Length: 451
Image (cartoon, rainbow, N blue to C red; front, side, top):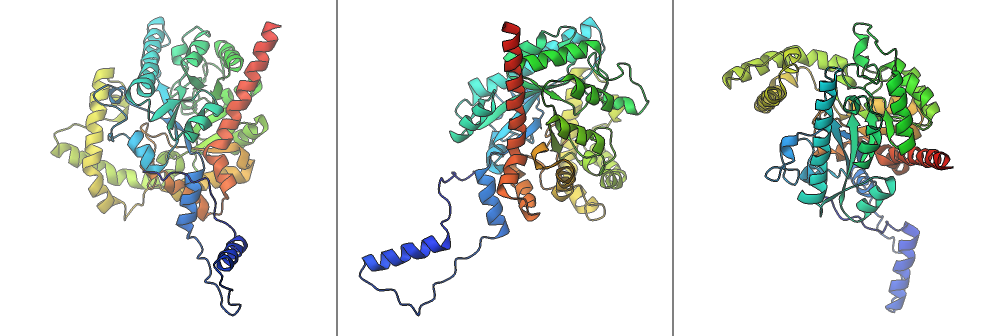
């Protein structure tokens, strides 16, 4: 459990010495000037990091979830195998979790839009059940930065909501306001696949850009997001779409879970040109701890060693592993069942991976992840960088592989010389500053509309 935050700080040595003198004098004992006081022991690096971690508000902008973990019988009040749940958040000192309303990209048809919309509403309802029915005494939904700080100060965990993929908007920009009213405070216009709103980064592989960035409908959606105070997320859209969004938006934008392309050449990451544009826009990039987005080299070195091992373990469990391309095409119920089995294989294989693979091909770790934070901070400044995990959506690195290990990120930041003020900005201050600015722009737009 995380320790209760004390409102007190260690007094400086001079004050402690003065208090000692007063105490001795009050007791009728003159201090011996020849006696040298014992020096106050310096805090270890880990102790300093722990104190900072306990004081700052830690916020992770991207945590996926499984609807099966949001039922009365099975939910986040329990320490489930999920990377994020309330016990793990408390154990690791993760204060704020942005829970993600995610829908995969489907056909751009009326039927596809309706199905995606229904799926999104189901996810919104699940989050509300958690905060209103299952654990209202432990976690509360925040709609503003002020809400988040108030809930945190009261000793509760904080939930916030992001929408991954604008596909469920369908052809109706008014759904932006509907999702906002349900608690959403950011939305990405596309995911892995082109949506009706914008191109996806995945088009890079085939140089396929049907929207040439943001579509006309996407432009309307951006205007609605500005009007109501919803942050625009650029983590999955294409580079051209990202540039369009910066030009179109009246408010700062965010990348909810992306890393630096200069360190890992993946289309999901942001190159230096994009990062500088984000700085000019006043936005923030939430650096993501997703192994294959942090180090392609380490990931590539491990893959040929891990895959045969997984096949062997799966065969022993009488489970057939499918190529990813086939798995994602399964009908929803079959796909969920398959991934449940896949997670069982991963869990069963973990001891062998650690014993047989890790010594030969080390995993991507917290230090590799913080390398990306360092690069982005050096390029665009401490005020435009944050932290995310993509837990339960493929994210996690050695040392920060679930919410219970959150402290290890702060420890690495302290090890590299980041100050408490800088760490507070990285963990939550920068993201909440952008949210404030986006909501201030919305208020101005609404006042102009009413005039």
